[in-house]
Amino acid sequence: MPELPEVEIMRRYFEHSALNKRIVGLQFHDPLFKVFKSSPEELQDSLIGSNFISTERIGKYLFIKTDQGNYLHLHFGMTGDLELFRSDSLPKYTRFVFEFEDGDKLAFKDLRKFGVIQLVDSPEVYQKANKLGTDLLKIQASEFIEAIKGRKIAIKTALLDQKHFAGIGNWIADEMLFNAGIHPKKACNDLNDQQLKTLLKEGQAIVKAAIAKDTHYGDFPKDFFVNYRKEGALHPEHPNSPVERLVVGGRGTFIVPERQKL
DNA sequence: TTATATGTTCGATA
DNA sequence: TTATCGAACATATA
Image (cartoon, rainbow, N blue to C red; front, side, top):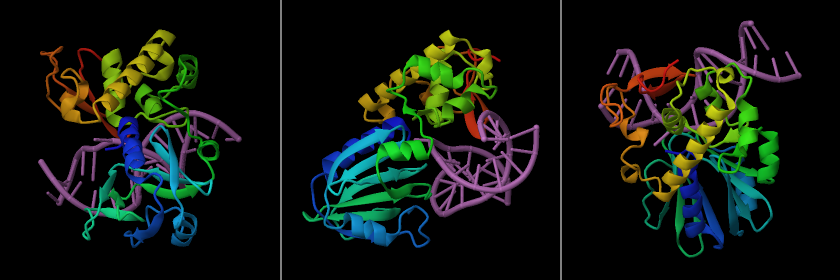
């Protein structure tokens, strides 16, 4: 699920469900500890008895500040999600649970276990240390253009790289390229500033629209490309050019050939 | 059985 | 040293 808009919605969900409540317990449900980058002892020491007081998001990376001053970092990988619950039975694919003093429990669910749970000093420190770029909604056009210009890799590969700007995932990259009429395999250094500017504008608009719809795909505008993102589908603006699937940078990629040419 | 899935990282190579 | 590419990770579904 999680690209920038989904993580933004999760950030808000976390704020509504878990802020300013004492943490009284933690549960670990990942025997091989794949999603934990901090040890259970560290997490216990740092979180039990503390409160979460605020949240921040950079691209797909979520940071939650504790009243101790440090942060819990959550990444949702491909299949991560949050769910508030109270029952004794765990939500499916739960890997981690926060227990709060009011009886609420918050599950970190992650089928494929590509997610990350980790204590960090601060978002800024993490961002520097891990070469995480500027959030897509905050980046200036000049910075965006500079980050792409001159590279010889495929534009889609550059869009998915979180190093210079963060938040674009597979479907949003396809959506941006469709809107801008650019072929995903086009080399970065074959694009002019105007095209890059358009890409950024489209990307920000897509992300904002998705957030406005609470990332409920069914509620997205009818002409969003993601609605036709499968082989052979027909976008209303291109009734004679069925969607084709290709692979770019190892990721499934969908285009309308008539609109996106090399 | 094989291919695919909304993500990131790491090792090999240039 | 930096940029790029592809495999790997874990699990379910078509």
